[in-house]
Amino acid sequence: MEKIAIFVDVQNIYYTTRQQFNQQFNYRAFWNTATANKQVIVAYAYAIDRGDVKQRNFQNALKNIGFQIKLKPYIQRKDGSAKGDWDVGITLDVIELAATVDKIILLSGDGDFDLLLQKARKVYQTKSVVYGVHALTAPSLINSADQFITINRELLM
Image (cartoon, rainbow, N blue to C red; front, side, top):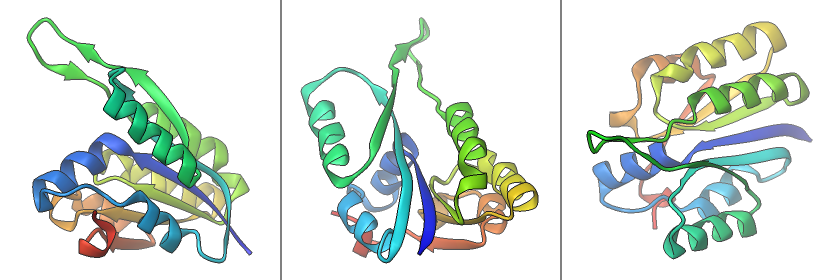
């Protein structure tokens, strides 16, 4: 059975599906498709913790599906902008786990991860699948993945 590790950039998926489709991503539909006949070694969902009830309910729903939630505090800057970037955390976890799995499944459109997927393939021979909103996914990330799966209506609520 193929061993997989799943890494979800929750903020990226939330904003890209909202921008492109004005809908939410269906994590249950994704899970059912992506994990069929596979051994899930780990499934991390990386999110920002604002501490509100709606967000806690969403995190609990992800846990019930099978995800482990990794949270960073929401940081509001003096200029009004917000900070909540998980790129380094995701990268560290992928590098740590790449040698133990056959395939990395990354949900993100962030082009910063292109080098990460290339490195995992080169050093560990680990294949990768990226799920993203095609129009909002960096071409470099699409090209770095062994397989790109477009988030479409079947993966939306």
